View (tube, rainbow, N blue to C red):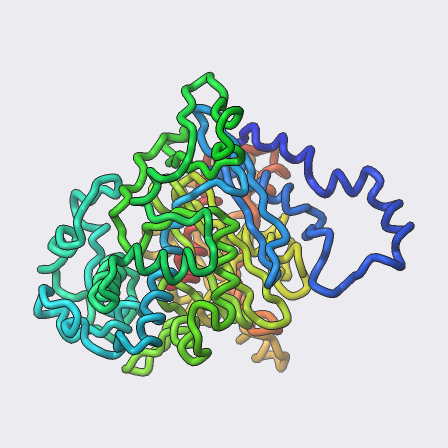
Length: 537
């Protein structure tokens, strides 16, 4: 959904405005002293917009109350910024120490824990889980530990079962029982489908081999080991020093107790319900173990992310390569995902993302030695895809390498994990599944070949619902030139594959149809189609 909220006031603080108020003269004065081109753009702007401006605009469009951003240019964390509020009712400000549920990013910590036990010789990745877990269904006994990490088991996801409520407390045995009798979706090791049950079972294996609770093992070998002071399991949140402030009141304890100065406070999460933000019951501390059970600050996530780069958490490079590379299945199929991470054609790019109740989380890693930039975004609205925003934020540090190559103000552009042909096939399937008519497909690469010219793969699909488009044309017939809808899928010179479509809300302004609810829904539809068609998870 697209919103206009008070967040836009933050534009007054943007780097664009600061640059207009004297920055040019300083640049001329010190032109021969300031370094350029060493590690990206020190002014952190992309296509004429500062990072602050991009984020405030995005928050306004998506109706996000609060967010924290952290940027890594390894080994530094040069920017951590809080935007908006963590609690609409009280107006508490998002800060660099705000604690957010990091959702499926939690899988990364579980995968590291498993690899640490593997390096200690306590865990066999290719061993069946029945070696470590005795009380499991017969159909699961030959599934391996590594298949749990790959999400290649076919085991049903307990989150999808009737009655599951993330705000309630369950034991692992209770959650496993909800899916124990469901047949495998596919033979283990032959395909990939994300399931929280896989990582619940992985934590059970970790406990059986480490002889410690999963939480204690991760705390000892990751959280405490690298000094993360704002990272907690949900079950440990009661230990966090935060003041309970009634609506209309102000913080007082920091005046008398030093522990409340710049305290690490938790957020309140929200969902969109018919253009209204509705508070969501918080995630239970012990639910979604191993999959979505960690709360952290954006800075701590970035600190942990830097530790992934070398031998600090996983000692051997060949072991790091097992979980930071696409899944290669025994049947020869390769899936560009592993342990919650997804991989792209852009060299060294990987990300891990998703939602927790009332929240959205994103972490991308540009791991190539020429880049080493990572972006963490944590927000307190559920179901927001932060991928496009994070890509533009990364591009602000070096647009030549990490940008989309398109005008992001006019076009919505999203990198695919697949080839042009496979991306187009997935896109077509998703459109048909929604019963939306497809009017035409164009293969520009093939057309170029037929006239003796070379063109990298480039295809366009044209589709739409006449009933919806007609309503727009009834308001302004000239908008017919923009209809039906279209999405382009193309490959760039570096091998990256992109999906692109016009920013409909920007286009609507040309027809004096700003804030038209039909156009807003069409924009959301296209964004969802693009995300689902280009990603494994």
